[in-house]
Length: 444
Image 1 (cartoon, rainbow, N blue to C red):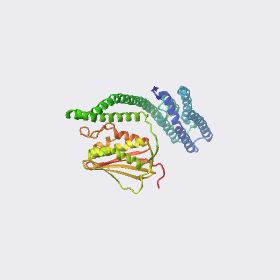
Image 2: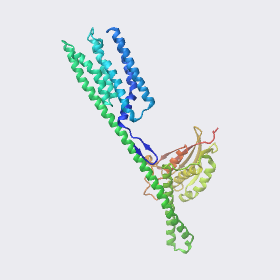
Image 3: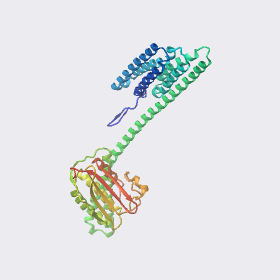
């Protein structure tokens, strides 16, 4: 059992899981048992005494009914691990009695008018014991008991037939067969134990990964707060110097601008890391409300003006027959996402390029907002890394500022608002990023 701050994960108890495996497979075994019993009754009707055959079938039905009731009880009560020894013993007794009834068929129905009848019975019993490897092999004691109960009486019957070479050969072959099916059961047992062990290892590895991820998120959140305090002081003093820049030499004015530029970029990175850590830790709060897209788009247009001027690109609107609808989102977070897409469209565009903003209704009462640019596009070999944290998609050495976190945050925020985000890109021609969101009212 692994205990963490917020979770308690129970590792698989090997012995208990093997017993549960027996009972999970029991309905199949019972159904096969009844089906072959009925077939046996039909085939042997004209070949053996009716009284013995009917009594044998009734005994099979009674034992099977008791086993079925036990299985039903197990499945519906889900007993704890501590009681598994008793349940295993109950299963062992039931399967052994069932196997013994099958194994004694040659002794019960003998003598036979022809050799084909005992051969048929042997094949039926042998098939049951072979098929039991997959159903009972996980608990070898149960499987061993079943195989001995079914096959040893059959082999003994053939070996004890005096004066018949074919009976002796058949009995010898059955002895070899018993060892073969027991070996198959041992192999299956090892496979099952290995799978349970791997399952436990996966549980432990997953829990360790979750612990490490939570520790990382806590560290990032803590460090982000710690870094913002001195960084705000640096920016504050830089802004004071900027106000008095007339008294500074030209060289120092340039240094002040670089300090402010680098400080704002670092503050942006810290804020994005903090957002990412909050999302991953599940501590980000959303205020879902009805938002008019036209108002949000107007606000984004005002805020993106400096980027449009800086990168010398123009913003256009795609013609649409419908008015921008209202959507159910967090206003601030949707604005953050849309500004990120518009900022990227400006940064990765050509001088004199275009950014086109569109808004169209789509199926299932949703609306799609698209941001299209005429920029450099995304190389095909980098598109699979698009929503990976800190991935700059080959732009690491470029002069374009970026953190590689914005799109990751955008994707997670949109999904938290029951939306979708996607893209299409042609290298050298541009990219289109889109988000789909639920409308607040049914659109006509």
